[in-house]
Image (cartoon, rainbow, N blue to C red):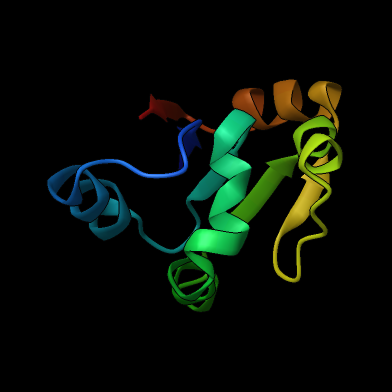
Length: 94
């Protein structure tokens, strides 16, 4: 299982396709910093990932900073983020 860490609200189209198409069931995505803005800008993509049984997490502190409340996925603390990194065999930062 891989953990994908996303900290930008948008990447070039080729990069977007690379990371979204490489996810498989059991993988997880952690969105932090400006990456949490994908709740607003890319909600359909996140919904599709959720349907593929990819776990979606958001850094709670960043959600609060942007005034966002996720309708899918979960907000987690920094300590829980550390736990995610220990749980997954590979970590991919985009």
